[in-house]
Amino acid sequence: MAGGPLGGRLKMCWKLTKRVDKRPVIKKKRKDCKILVIDDDAEILKLIEAILASAGYQVESALSGRKALEIAEIADGNVDLLLTDVVMPEMNGEELALVFKQAYPRTKVIFMSAYLRPAAARFEEYYGKTDFILKPFTPEKLIGQVKRALF
Image (cartoon, rainbow, N blue to C red; front, side):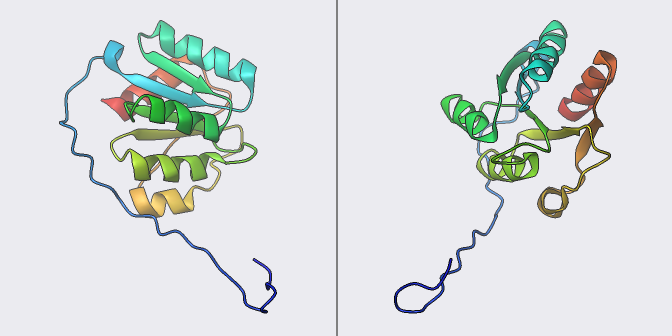
């Protein structure tokens, strides 16, 4: 923030910390798993939604990170997997995943992008190895990646 009328500067920082989720761990079946898909391209979003729904998953989708956070809040964090595009306007996929994991630590995350393995360094720093799928992908590849992340 630029200097104010008194000439001072204000710098704001947020520290990301892991939160403990007290909900009991329950082994779920595919039909009970809820996936939240985020992509700023509506056509890609519909296609991914159809692929995952045909595989038996419950799927919600959002065109932006902000909308995804609203959906998660309404669902009281009952999201098993966040499948997010990396490059998006407003809030990119890594920023979304960092906020999401802070609020809902048990949710798994898969990043997807048309770019070769874009950086998710901050996410990896806090949560370890990241799952990534390169677009375009086949339905089989997507379903396999989701299955590995969830089970």
